[in-house]
Structure formats: structure tokens, C-alpha cells
Length: 74
Image 1 (spheres, one colour):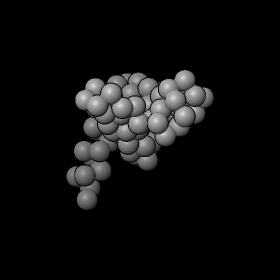
Image 2 (cartoon, rainbow, N blue to C red):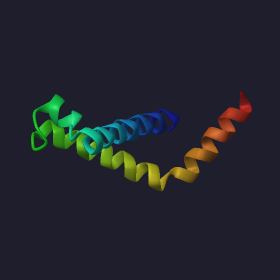
Image 3 (cartoon, helix red, strand yellow):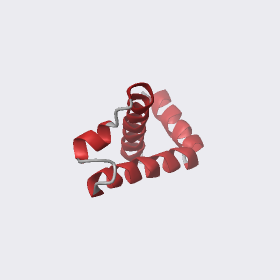
């Protein structure tokens, strides 16, 4: 599960950076890389980032407990 937590976190960072670029510079990096905001691949990326956000919301407490236990073992 820790690997999934890291993957979800990376996707949330990607989504956050994309929103930051969109807000500050009106530049959608995902759309630029994958062929426009309505392109299938762009929509897949948007959907996966959205699922990562939902996972992050639902698993927040579990993730923090899991990571704190792992850090205390090190």
C-alpha cells in the first residue's frame, strides 16, 4: 500500500502543478503534452489525478498512521 500512497501523492503534485500553471499563466501542461484538453489521453490523465485526489481524501488518516509507524521503525 505504501507504493500506492506514493503514486497517489505524485499524481496529486502533478495535478497541483498543472492547476498552478493554469491559474498563473493560463497554460495547461497536460493538454499541451497530450494533445488538448479534450483529447482522450488528457482526459485519462485528468481522471487518474482526480481518482488520486479521492483516494488521498479517503485514506488520509490511514496513510499518516502507516507512514508514522514506518518512520518509527527506521
